[in-house]
Image 1 (spheres, rainbow, N blue to C red):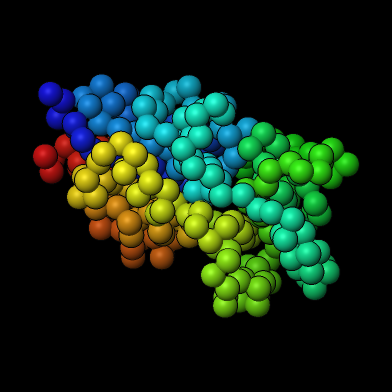
Image 2 (cartoon, rainbow, N blue to C red):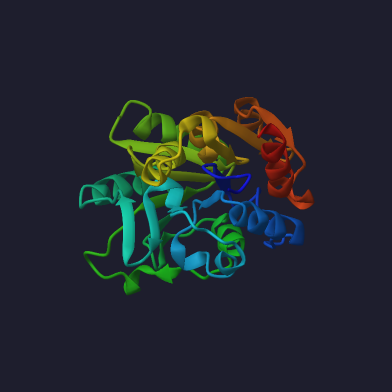
Length: 266
């Protein structure tokens, strides 16, 4: 019997597990290895598509399924998909309307293996730097490619206008501010909180033994869904308010500290 048997820890990546220069600290890596070695289930939960996570996935022993694209895709690997929520052809008129009404806003289309740049904005370069990947032009898009997430980039006040105007009164889509300059749109059933519950049910983990840690707006649903939650000191105000406990920031091994707190509870 391990000390973490039957415990699920779901961790955000950017701003939580990863440092500002996109590294996993030795402390975090060692803590996750010990957590899983002692029977715990570790699950990464990110807004990124699988195509942009290959640099750090091998460093984390994820026995649990992984949550990508803010919960739109849950899988072990490409051959073993647990659940996915994709857009149909109805998304194209919405994309065209939003881009026509807000000409300064950038638009990125997320598939599992590629990010397509529908239209750039001044914030697009920052987003590419964040995920460390050049986005593909729309000329490379193949009709019928499965899309999971639409990312809109621009000034925060403009993105809030879009969120209110197009997604405030609909139960068809979920729209969350993952960062001040980034609004992400998925199917309504796709969020990290629902994904956490899906993974817990799949693994047979009781809700009281589920833990989450995250720093941003796209983490709120899982911070609220978990039995107990943490937010790093660098988290935004909403995430800090939703979390049960604040831990050191992402530059000081937030996840390792959270695991130490979990160990003290059991």
